[in-house]
Image (tube, rainbow, N blue to C red; front, top):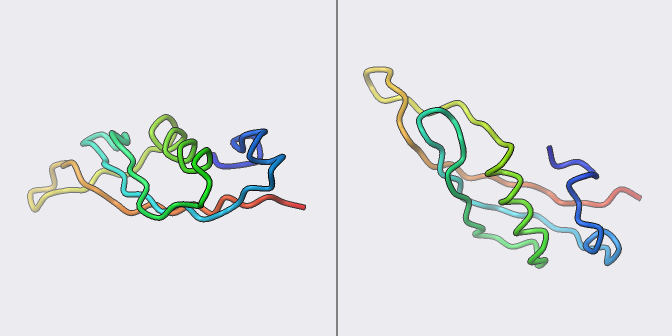
Length: 85
């Protein structure tokens, strides 16, 4: 999901790397409704694309209430955006 193909060409060419930590909102079916970066990689393009990929492609197991019904939740999400040399 966050492989080489997910790296922006400009960010790759500039050697931009870093860790992105975001808070994601998960709905009752496991889709990501929102993503907010709390710890930046120091690269706005990497931060932005991390959340774009998470909201488009990431699916999570929904949280459950005491009765076992799926409920919305939030979860921390971290991605190391590194270039392979």
